[in-house]
Length: 44
Image 1 (cartoon, rainbow, N blue to C red):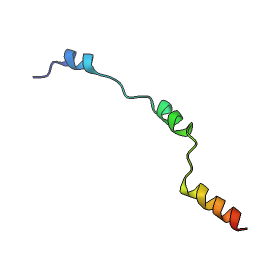
Image 2: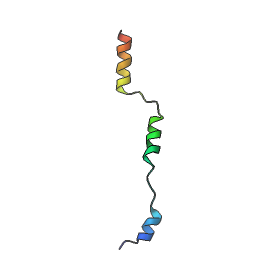
Image 3: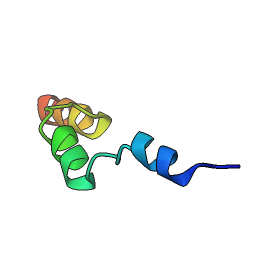
Image 4: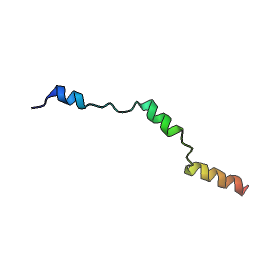
């Protein structure tokens, strides 16, 4: 049988989605669209 009090002691909430989104958007990552735009710009 589960001991709910014991399980609640182990509980750790997941990070807030705004914290996760902030961590993702703070990184300057180049994606394929950026690469293709740069290639088209150089081609002209």
